[in-house]
Image 1 (cartoon, one colour):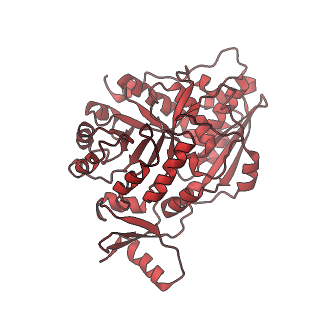
Image 2 (tube, helix red, strand yellow):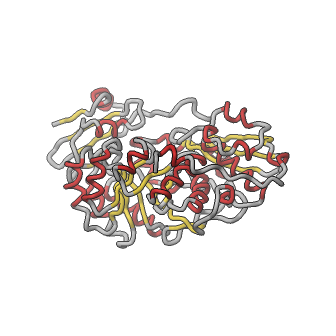
Image 3 (cartoon, one colour):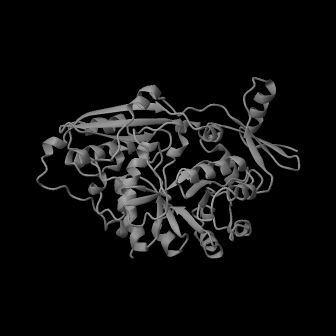
Amino acid sequence: MASSAALLGHWSAPQLPAAVSSTWLTIEKIERTTLHLPFREIPARAMAREIPHWQYLEICEVTLKSGKTGFGETMLFYTWGTTSDQAVERCRGKNAAEMMWDDSLGAGLQMALFDAVARTLEVPLHALLGKKHYPRTPLSWWNIDLPPEDLASECALAYKSGYMSLKTKGRPWFDLWKQIKLSIKVVPESFKIDMDFNDTLLTAERAIPILKEFDSIPQVDIWEGPLPQADLEGNHQLKEALKAKVALHYGNPDPWDMLKTDACDGFVVGGGASTLMRTGAVCAMSRKPFWLQLVGSSVTAAHSLHFGGVLEWAKWPAVNCHQLFDVSTLTAPIVVENGTAIVPDAPGVGFELNRDVLKKYAVTKPATRPEPQRLLETTWPDGRTMYTASNGTVNYMLTHAIAGRMPYFEKGVNTRLVPDDGSAKWRDLVEKSREKPYMVK
């Protein structure tokens, strides 16, 4: 291997047959619909603390001269790329097959173009990507950080629903020991739990003694982002010291440096179609497994299935987060059995839009990310109480933890959202904890 840039050059987009008439691939119409989807009960409680804006999604539909319509989706305030008005105008009247590999079009529009082209050619979407290596692909259940009892409940539901893995968040404001203790009681040893720390374990010296306590637990499978990604040596130390695997997000720092230092066992991979295929080629040549992290409702999950079938080293369960929602944007469910789902062979993405859901949950697109004021209360068994208020940034709680502005991982810690009761006390606590956590001794 010479460099990550050279590795990326080994992949190029497949070419369509010359006999295909470009007339039928002309983009005639592009429509977008904003949805505000309800969460299930447990995710709703958790997402309200930090990322309630995940409820806003945009469905994009593209109709070609062939009369076929494809669809895709953008999670408006959490995505690798939104679809702009300019991108829509740039595509009108163009050949969809010539445009669909352009990642700058954003998630929803790019997905819809692939779907429309595949439906026009009467082939499954995966046929446009390359050879299908797998008839089925693994999927993981997902939830943001949860109180131990809620996490155990979600593990049980995931297993009952056919999943064999769950990814969640490891945070210093929840009891990591109790989370795992309760969760492993409700699932078999073959069920795997992955935790994403988003850098909050800070250093290898502090992280290794904690994570080694879980080394003998069969369900504990992957630690994602335990340390800052730039700490390649520290992540390598964790990888060598622990039985559980270490996963890092592909691309930062340079993948070549990540591979040279053997900083992880595998990667978290996201992005547009061209990015995914190039990244998949690097992972195949370096023999690094990865999971696809393409986030949205069941529309995004359906598209993800096709990449999972084609990318040979997409061996870890994909994280799509569609299990959060109380309704499906598809007319048929994505059926998961023994941890995997079928990679569809029907034309296009292999599913249809649930237009009843589109009609019921359509809303006006917000001009900016909704930002309700939130106040969190964190407590410890020794009587300490900490308040943290939202401050206009997405990861306001996480940012404080990474910066070391709150206590490190401890047993017995718990966190809750404090409702706005209209009182002066609530407003005073918000003001005191907006800039940094406010600790009450």
